[in-house]
Length: 445
Image (cartoon, rainbow, N blue to C red; front, side, top):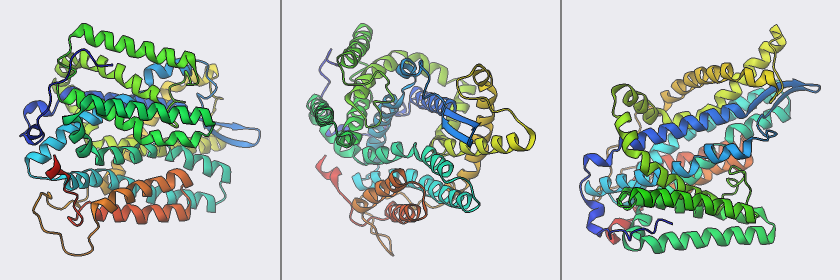
């Protein structure tokens, strides 16, 4: 839909140029922080903890709310997350290329940033849930808690895959930007068509990679200046057309008007929404940049940049912990726990959000102790010799990381899935610090 102007071809040599100050854009960091806040508030509002006739109830509080589907058109920010990720991936890849790194070194840097938080999460949550089951907490409640905690892991799995493919996708974008976008769009539409025609939802999970690679590719258009070269009316028109197309697709069926229902499995609707969000963000980006450069916002945004992944992974465990505390207080002191969506429940949400923020901050600071421990070796660049000891090729480490996170995402936080996940993530972590099996895609770019 961004067809107002053909992008200036990016020379292969441009991918390796030295970064300028504009490579770190405060507006990008601010948008990422805003997305995290939206996700935090949304997930906090989804937590419903009450006591029914059969005992404690932990549920999705917004599941029966009639206003949820319309609200998703505003709070579904995952496409913008991946657009920003595409921008960041493109600029980081150029930066690494300028320092002599190849594609394998780039993938290792992403692994190191993402795998360590995942190891801490899987180890702690698996242990805690096993202890709770052993002391007699109802099995269905333990299973529900594990399911809720594991939900954010889909993002980590997909983000690992998309991030690792940035060098290859940047290579394609530099040569055939519109052809690449078109091919990914056709592939996503084809997966949707096959899924709805067959009635087999599992077919749609192919789009976990296709749709998010497509949205990440939109971020490349922001990073290489294509979007900024469009006039403001053209970008406004692009956003309007994208939203109109999205509404038309949903009206024609079979896509859901609930944009969160389009998330699992992902559909082409999310990519269309991503086009609209990209265009709108590009319009507000200058004003957002000026605001983000002020001292106080700058400090707050820097905190989100430092703790962002930790916050994302640990906010739901913090919510479950807080829900457990509320249940204890209910039984010990008669603390009222209103049923979700009642008037009393809505009136108590500000208090709940404040408590959730406090508990999450404490949990995040504790979890970050593991993540901040020195583990990263020196920067790996082309020409380095393999480190001594057991070496894991990056071509093995990336799939191991994806499978490790996927194990608990699909199978839950049980003893054996947790152990399998930790083994695979340990392999991935080792691969993040070795040169063995380096994929020198950079030489092809």
